[in-house]
Amino acid sequence: MVSQLPLGCSFDLLGPAKCVTALEADHAGSRLVAGGNDYMCHLYDFGGLKSDGRSFRSFEVTEGHPVVAVRIAPRTCLHFDILHVQPTDPPVTLNSQTSWSPTGDAFLVVTSYSQAKLYNRDGKELGELPKGDMYIRDLKNTKGHVTNCTGGCWHPTDKTAALTCSEDGTLRVWDVTEVQQKTVIKPQLARPGRVSVTGCSYSADGRLIAAGLADGTLQLWDVRGKFGQSAAIGLVPVPKAQMVARQAWTYASAPGQIVRAAHQPSSDITCVRFSLNSQNMVSRGGDGTLKLWDLRSFKAPVRSADGLPCNHGTTQCCYGPGEKYILTGTSAEAKDRNGSLVVLHADSLDVLAEIAVDGSVVGVQWHPGINQIFAGCGGRTGGCVRTFYDPKLSTKGAVVAASRAPRTINTDFMQLAAPTIYNPNALPMYRDESMPGRPVGKKRRLELEAEKRKYQPAGSSMAKGVGTGGRLGATGGTLLTAHVLAQQGGLANFKEEDARAAFLQHADKEDVFSRFTAAYEKTQGPTVFAAEEEDEEDAGE
Image 1 (cartoon, rainbow, N blue to C red):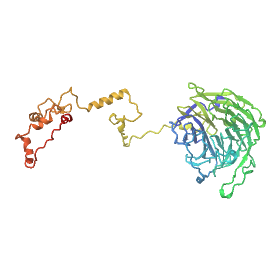
Image 2 (image 1 turned 60 degrees about the vertical axis):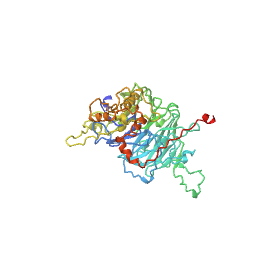
Image 3 (image 1 turned 180 degrees about the horizontal axis):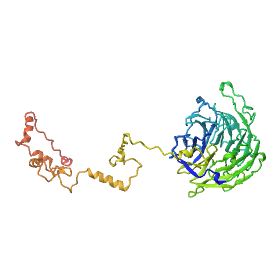
Image 4 (image 1 turned 90 degrees about the horizontal axis):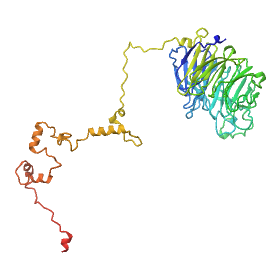
């Protein structure tokens, strides 16, 4: 039985900087979208993917928020009215869940922010679901989620419907063409308060909705026919002058089936998945268990598998092709330990295979068309989508991509050399060390002092005179200029020279100095000196 599993080879899709928490391939297996704790979504096209495993596009969904779910649209053409797109709110975190539409031409990305987003096949944003009013106490009367989303999925057959759940304790069904909600579902609680909805899913025929709560409760709703009642019933009519739109959505609360303490109350139910016949369901819990349920006798689990560590609130599980196997991942319990990809038998939940993977395994998918397993793994320092396949059992996808050599740079043509970037502040002479609050180390301080001494004139211990040490005439050579200045007395030290005596030595002499002062002899007035003042003591005598 183990020989039938496509686990012979592996191929890594690179790009994520942290753990990949959500992933999903489209129905044909030609494209895959993955998101994680690095707030990014990465798109991979197996038709052009090389052996280096690089994505053809990466984008940040909501700033500062990790991805929690991605889902793909059903198989029909979707139309989105861009006029209904809501403005982006301040930075947000992605919760890792992505979902392709049934058509495969669009996918839903749910982050840890209160607003999920819709993208087309190439990663262009088509719309953003509206945000509710956090100041309204009764959440059935607000138009969207008010706190972080925890999961979401697309309707399996209706191309216009999608489902999301949130920590505000509600599930909301959306009309993606009008970008507005159609139904608000509030789970039934054991006691008054608010309990987060940590996982949700549609059945394969779209008739049932399952939800897992943070208190370990599983609840099911049958959405066939007229589901719920108008949310406007019992409200006081709003005056027309206020121009407030009427609540057009419906509201439901009481589930058709409910199981209290399905998992430990202190742990989240991270994932719920239906079988194709909608008679069985599997749930993954933060208590380290995976449980199999029979919906025809929805009171206790049919089987339970223990010893599956789960430290991530979005750890997924899924059925394999033919529903013979169940796939899930485990978390690394310490830095020096790794998580694993676990394959269990669908009936007995016996472990058939367990493959160790670096970091934790969170997002998983077993694609039935190409028979390949995708595992989103990683940790704080890195992440990847590890693809498992068998050359004999698998087709297309990673089988073809792994054999393609990465594109090389053509060196036959002339290429411009990389420009050299000069950063003046990197040079010591341009560094501004006087900025307040910037400490200067001892080594750097000595370098600065040596740099200053280089441009300072020599001290008294060095040779005097300009020319050596910044003084003229002290070069020690026999330059003509130095000889002339020595004869004219120009090399005397001005600090030791009496300026008054040097000036009076030209008085009453016929020399070069008197030639310049002769022009003032006729116009020069008599010399007048200040009279000497007597001291006060002499004046008193």
